[in-house]
Image 1: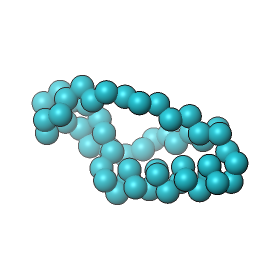
Image 2 (image 1 turned 60 degrees about the horizontal axis):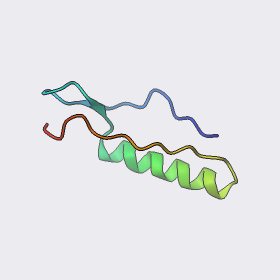
Image 3 (image 1 turned 135 degrees about the vertical axis):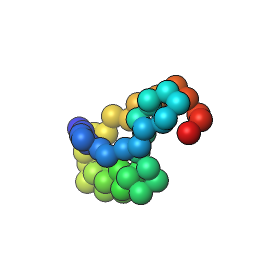
Image 4 (image 1 turned 180 degrees about the vertical axis):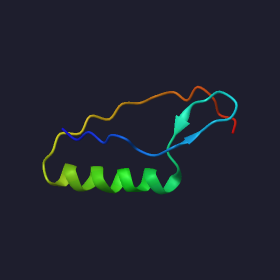
Length: 54
């Protein structure tokens, strides 16, 4: 199983929700794709954004 911790992110000034920027998101997708091809189990969870305003 792949676990990525301490991912730097941005914070919504309206609600305080933390989220990764585009560069970090692309990097996580690359890591995940590589690990899946190598046979690792990846747990992907879907989260609903608490705020869509920045």
